[in-house]
Each structure stands twice: as structure tokens, then as C-alpha cells.
Length: 288
DNA sequence: TGCAGTGTTGCTTC
DNA sequence: CGAAGCAACACTGC
Image (cartoon, rainbow, N blue to C red; front, side, top):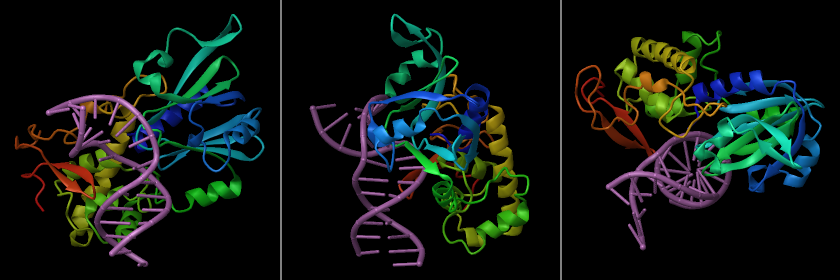
């Protein structure tokens, strides 16, 4: 499931592969993926538009297009973008034999864009939860206005973090995953951040002292930065644009390690349900 | 075979 | 108003 580091990895790769390219065809077998307008209208509008910029806000990917239009993509649980090369052979567009479009997971490709320079961009999405929208500037701003702070923004310092959590009720794990508080953290990285700080996922935010908040703030920066360096996680079906897996497994300490030994103290990692999700933690290191 | 588990977001319900 | 539950969808593992 793509969280901030996975989305950032994808955006950096998109800037190397599709920037300044123009859409000239689009195909789907799942028209409901395109929200708000019909697929036919979407197709008519996007053909001929050029990608001027690719960036990220929380877990959303935004393509700034020519003509003041914006392509907004949220990958949700199982969506991921892939970019490969294609060619015209015997009157048919075919992917070149090498590359991400050959991966077996890509039987889940439901949306495909053809761009110039032999480039093909595909959305693979097992559960079809991903969202794609074509918006004008006002609509885009409205979609993004409720999203919380960007944790890796240079201006996001400890004071700002404290303000984000001020007067927040609830358990620290749930608050960290709340996109309206801080953007981009999901189930994997909230577990990893809290293990590093030795704080129990069920701790009430209001009970955390300044030192503990500082630990969490530093762990957010550290874990997310490290995960981006490693190209994202690799235990779900996440793939980089090239179809490769990320390398975050080298750093993964608790997520989906139930019953395995804590790397710090050897105690078996436990799993608890919280709001319908799993929290993985060390019952000895992370006291409530 | 069938059913729980997987997790993001947004809507519904209490 | 806020929290909790569930639906959107489809596959995997027990």
C-alpha cells in the first residue's frame, strides 16, 4: 500500500520518464476509476495535453497539464503506476518485451496512457480502489485543502508538529495516520515510527510529554527519509515505476512481524486491532 | 469450499 | 459533532 515514501519514489521516477510528454491515447477496462466525468469526456479532454510538472501532496500524485488542467491520482490500497516503452508492430501497439509491463502482477492493469516518445504509463490496481480525476485549478485546490502538514517539508519543525497534535484526542497511531493532521503516513510507517520511539500505539496523544513528542517528530523524519532512500517498501504488491520492488525491508522492524523477535529485546512482536486495522508493536519495549 | 484478512478514504449511522 | 462501522473491490491464505 503506497504511503508517502512509495508515492515520493513514484513521483521522482515520473519526473525522469514522463515529464514534458504529451498524452495521445488512453484505454481502460474500468471506467469507474475516472471519477466525476465519463471516460469518454476524460479521453477527449486529456488527449493533446502535455505534462508540465509532476508532484505530490500527501499520498496524492498531481500532474500539472497544459491548458490549466490537473490530473490527480490516488493509488489507495493496491494501485500503482508503471511506465514502459511500446512500439507499433503490424498495426498494433505493443509493449517492448523487456520491462514492467511483463510482470505477472500486471494482469491488474486497468488504465493505460500512451504518450509520445514510445512511452506507456499504466495503472495496475488489484482492488480497483484507485481514484483518477481531471480537474481545473479551483477543483484541485478544493481537493487538497483539507490535507495536513507535509512531514518532510523543511519548514515542518518541532513547533509545527506540536501544533498539529495540540488538543487532538485519540490514540497516537490513529492520529499519525489521520491525513488531515499529518499527510502521508499509513499503517506500515506509523508502526515503524512508534517502535523506534518505544511508544505504545494505543497511547493517548494528550498523555505524551514534550520529550516523547520530540522522539516521535524525529522518528517521522528519519523513517520516511530512510524509506525514500530505499525506494519504498516491498512486502505488499508495491512496485516502483520500473516494476522493481523497494528495499525498505532492510529497515522494517515491526510491521507484519507478529510472532517474530523484536530486534531490540528479543520479545515476540504482537498485533492488536485498532479501528479495524492492525498495529504491530513490541509489548516489552513499547509500554502503554 | 468458504470466510477472514488485507488498508485508504469517504460516507452513513448512532 | 465525533467516533465507529462499513462499503468500494478482488484476491490470498488458512
